[in-house]
Length: 71
Image (cartoon, rainbow, N blue to C red; front, side, top):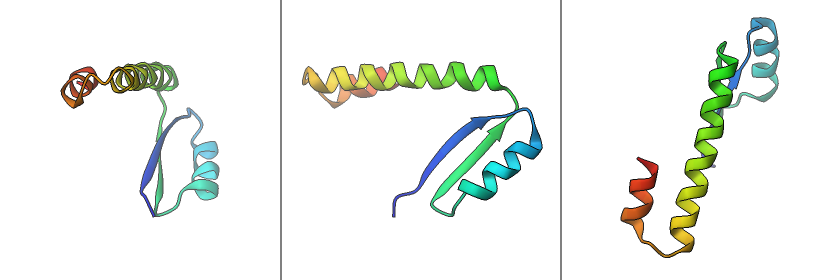
């Protein structure tokens, strides 16, 4: 098994607990934060960085370029 985690934005603690009971497992960890807008912005930024790293791989620019994009 491969460990995985997800970050979820939720302002309602009761909803967070219900979702945690349904989905959270030893190999899939959920993290809940009340700052929904910040979670959305950081998720979008993560996707942009992942796309740029993919472009670097597709252009065969090398691992150093991909590492530079990720930092």
